[in-house]
Length: 467
Image (cartoon, helix red, strand yellow):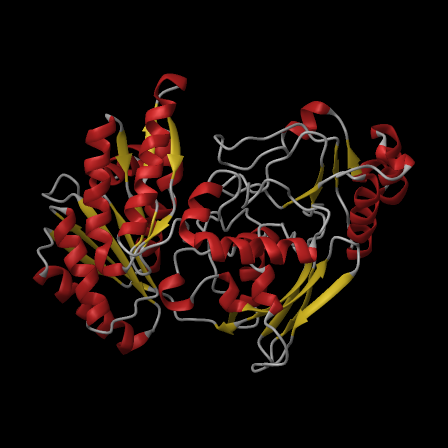
């Protein structure tokens, strides 16, 4: 991008942004900006921004975008930085557009089961707010207690309840989006049905800040489910756990949650929490399920899940309707990432999704890749929808090349099993070549054409998703 105005100088641009947002709305201290320069994937490249802009309204977002576009300076939108693909990582000389101050729940329309929110609202805060109306916002990434809805929208985040409730896009009715020329696009609707025009809402959900900046979202809510019953099953080997998943799906059971952790992950969580999840009782791979159907329906569903796990060779099966006990088991699942971090080495978290009937093949394949590269690979993920998170553990620069080889091999394995290179984390600045391989030349060309049509001068997040 080439500068076309006096605002193209660094000082001139910062002055213009400060005039629009105030001194508290523009950050230039290098130490402060460093905290805004990357997400939670330390491996993806990142640069040093010119400034961090903190708008408080759609109008201020429009001002920032117009000012940066006029100056030929790229804009990198950002939420809480909880992402795991480098999609929010800064570029040298860019303006990071941090949307965390836009954190209002604008409306909860209980009668129509709709909420209107700004992008800085924390996922868990929306859940709590709508629960007061006996309503429920389903998407629940593992980081739901600090990730923002804008980031969830940008990556089309998934979570633990996807097996029953789908990913973020399944709960989005409409968006307000600031385009690269500063104009405001409104997409979608508030009605249950609506087929007028192209589905632009789904185009922007998952676009990782490359097509526009989401400043408001209209979200569909559901009736608040019953307190869930929880089942945990420990299997001596991965194949048996995979058999259980296949049978659960084949028998038409739809638990509200179905998670899987391999033996190494289970041991890491046990050490991290100081608890026993059954790895010492002949178990290895752990399957965790929940039913939020309530009452007799939940009891029947848990009994059916228990039967399938027993018949599939589980060494230990335990079901409970006690919310406190279920909460402890869920804490174990949500502690996977910090447990892996506590192993002391660096790690690459992959995000492949395969058909649910091929989860065991993916986990076994990861074990083979681990032996081939000589590094540990731990596997956990969402068995209910086949979205797995193999994590390569490595130590320093000396092992980085082998770790990246393993990471790419896992993605190739996922593709060979009929899967995709990203189920929920996105592409960002770490998987561009893998995306190109999955899309193929025609698919990649169409993606590039759409991006150029909406952002012809490359204002938004250049270098992300596509090289």
